[in-house]
Image (cartoon, rainbow, N blue to C red; front, side, top):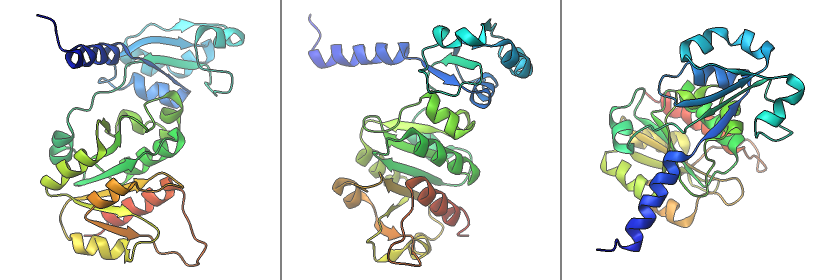
Length: 261
């Protein structure tokens, strides 16, 4: 019996995901990935100088490096000419953090998650992962499409947080939001025009788990995302011209949520 087309497509997507790899680069990102037992590592390319600096991490990973001439590094690794690799690159598979429900209910840290609505800049997402780790969030959640995937640039900006902070990419953000609400999370969407302040919204949430929902710079939260939030809140500014980069707004909201008790 012939399989339905949707089954064939699903199986093809599963095989493609299993085969997907990415290159991490830079001493810090490569060191943290080498030290992460959950990270599947495939190929390590280093200059002699980088290998000397990463000796302990190389030993921990048990992966033999390919030592290459610094002048020929770019011909061995497909990073592009503008990437500051510091003579270190590691080919890996994306991390599998498991299901949203497991992480949100039983994960380490405070019952606090960040949801990103089409934030595509890897530097912003990397910075948000760093803040999420610092303030003890259980996960950063983003849609699989129209969001920043795991890349070397994201890992470098995250400065190691990508290896420790769950970054879950879901099929449908609104569905993930409703799933969190069913777990008892209160979802606060950050919007500059909101009448309620962030502090007031957190006070209304009380001791319940909180999800902070942030949209991309410019477009902000999509209509469906706004409607799914429990309330919209704003970070008050001292002037009419105040505005924040999404990663800065996330850091402020995370600090406020983590210290609300």
